[in-house]
Length: 194
Image 1: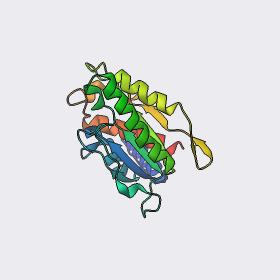
Image 2 (image 1 turned 90 degrees about the vertical axis):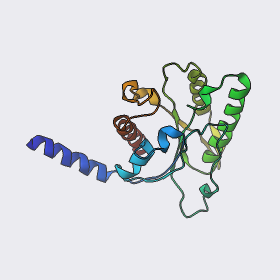
Image 3 (image 1 turned 135 degrees about the vertical axis):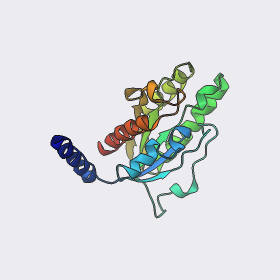
């Protein structure tokens, strides 16, 4: 019991010692719920988070808010783009072509404004074969550098498959509280490894 208490104190001290980072989350229903990965980044890890996630959001049906300009009072250091699960529900080259174009526009905006952009490549969901098209599209985007303010920068792709556990979802896609904690811990480590 004593060892458990000591381990908990060390864990809390390590969490408190992490640098607090301003984070902007742009996602769909997976990150919109209370207790989601983005929510826990603030409540459990102390980051300052604006969660602009919304159920049903996709690359096509998604707009970025106007308050993300560098001139604003609140300018995040990190932007997390976690979209793609709603895009996989519709088949067709036209649809995926439009998804790619809109994703490029949104991702470029984050990079052009000086954000460190982390793109979460969705997990391989059972029964959704189109997800591989979205995964490939995001991976392709992350492989190309852009010129921003005289520097070559690129988005970072991170792969939810690295930590995703289908047994910890409510319906095959939406995480349970346990999976949200796993995702938040994973993302917080990625944010800290700058």
